[in-house]
Length: 224
Image (cartoon, rainbow, N blue to C red; front, side, top):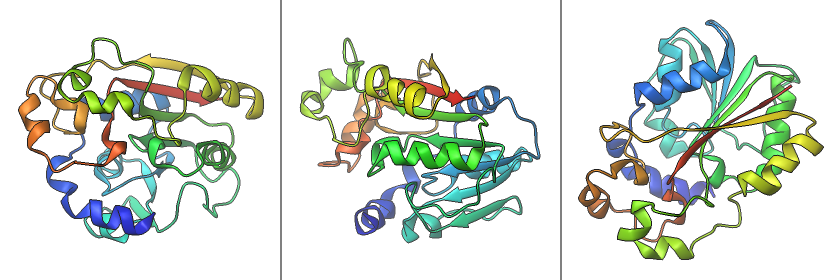
């Protein structure tokens, strides 16, 4: 996995930035105040880690790709860990909350990743900003790029089905779903963000990378 993301990470930063509206939604759903200890799982190059650190939160960022980590900006409130969501070695109850931003579709085992997130957060909030593969109707990306309709990566959970049951039954946690309509002027250019300017997506060098289908956004909050 690391080799793949090391290659992908070489062209990642120019297209991505922490959009302040997404940052604010994460903070609102966490319902925590700085300097709470937060874990950012699948942090990539740390755009959202850095933005949360700027707000005064104490951030530990988990990212297996060295190329990704090397592109991150330094911050006194931000610490990096070269590991995966499934192999974290933090103590139980180490954090007040967890965020996962556009990353759960990358996990080798999302169930174990959620189990680990629950363990280290000690029942605190877990906020996941993610693509729901089931929301395909009237979505612009599938009109312009119909090949995306054929893609359902094995690691991408069905949020309304197996994912929800796992959180409720296996983790014994509450779960809520919130939609996030994508503004036309998002500065974080994940694939589905450019619905008002589809030519931007067409120009990107994202060919053959299934996990960029970050279409219709939902935020999932789980915790006791």
